[in-house]
Length: 402
Image 1 (cartoon, one colour):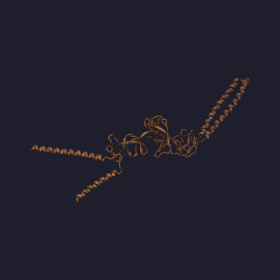
Image 2: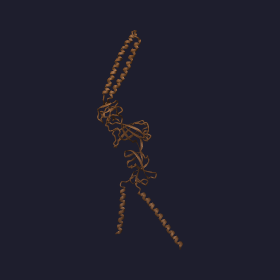
Image 3: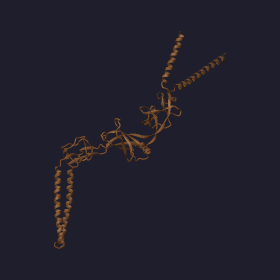
Image 4: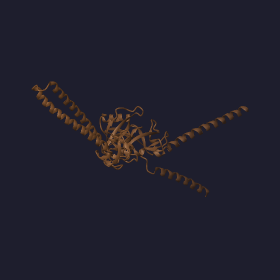
């Protein structure tokens, strides 16, 4: 009897275990079917490449072609100024006057010394000519002639010395009028009228030329190497565009016409410079912005539809399918938009498969259902179907109650 009870219990436990296993298997199978049916519908596209003009962007700084610090080249009191701060001045235009009387007197004195030496030279040249005739006829001793010749040569040297002193005095006198060395916009006056100035006192004001203007920018050495590879040479000029710090694009295009002869070891960049026309003075010395430099030749680059690209705090991204057709979040870098596509500089390659529609419900690593086209309003139809089922259940309950 006892054996029969034990056998019955074993059979019961076996049935319970089998039931549990079957229930677990059914639950898993149903979950799998539900997962497959709940997978979002997406449209997939293969990444293609097109030939484009490659561009790179970099921070930039505006600088004047000529930046001149106007200095006093002599000592004296500043007596006059002939401009207003901020004026546009021309090369050779008078800016300041340093008290000229001292230097004018020095010119007159140097001129007097020179005239006296010239007169003495003229006298001894005439005397030497007479002595030449007399010595030929033995009317004077040869030593007298030699003495006259020495006097003539001494005054020749004296004339040369006084001519140099006279030119130096004239030069110093000319420095009493401080003139603009270049065309440009004049800055703030650092030393006002009435002050004593000299070459060691610092600059009086500054002049920055305005047209053309330089824009210098550091470009990553890898990007620069790519440009050279595309264009086939480093010794070429390239078109550039300048963006103000506000993001507004400067209307004049520039030309990158200079490169430094070394790569900065700290930053890994090479300094380039572009020249821009600046007829209206919109580019200002020292301003910061951004530069866009373009290759001369076209090269193939991957492009992706604009609607396939999203953005978060870390940057732009899209969903790329892996080997199992599972979507993976993939960050990319883009350069510009062209014909409804983003041109991609890194992060994706031609031939990769990306999701271009149905992205809103995609979760990275979760299965998706790939379709040729997502029907408009399909989500609304599913919601309406669910509502109809719920209404049907309530209708059946009402019929049973009756």
